[in-house]
Image (cartoon, rainbow, N blue to C red):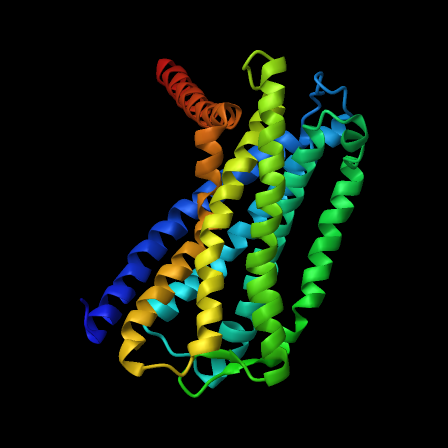
Length: 332
């Protein structure tokens, strides 16, 4: 059993090592996500299976593009500062409150809630698209309307999280905390537990399950061959499972702090270690999306391979041109 000092040491090292690995691989993965979903959202391919509008076919790709951009922001700012806080035991001073408390938590909750919301909407769109009910399929919006929804979600969460810019301050221990008792209850139960945890867990559990059931029915009709549309639906189901699993420890941690914040101090080292593990799991969502998509979706793998093949081919072509020009100059 770890003593308090050993638990702190393990926690700091775990945050540094795991955090840096997640930052590197997560940033690369989300950049590749942005590339692929940008291509898919511009695709003019129609879906012959359901005779749907091209704009409807691209809705999920647009949502996932917006989600990937939000994930990248979460990694480049909140995760980096979380590594500094928990990995290097950094205390925030009063002159850093705007950048490391107010703006940080505003960006964290705005970007993460946008990412979860866009993913939920992509999953719901796949549920509509894969339905055998024509009325449900027709509920899928046009591409133009989808872009409007994405912008409205962005505006809503920016306005919703303005109180974070007002009420977050530096505590006496050098941590960022809400300095309003009234808002702290809303922040804990509405923002952290409900919006970050309960809502996406319930929503994705329901519509992920329904989409999975509809996929099994669709496979029968296409003789077990999954086209691009069904591959996208399948990868959303797998990502939904990952989000549900990683959201549970975060909710449990927030509830624990509310109920036992003034518990036995002898357990603080172990509690801090559990906090670090919970934080790492919290950032699994923005980090793992590309790798889940890559493993589960042959068409996404093909797009990534084409990207690197074109880069390699372009590099070889450029080198050949340089050698040819050099040879010509030498011959003269």
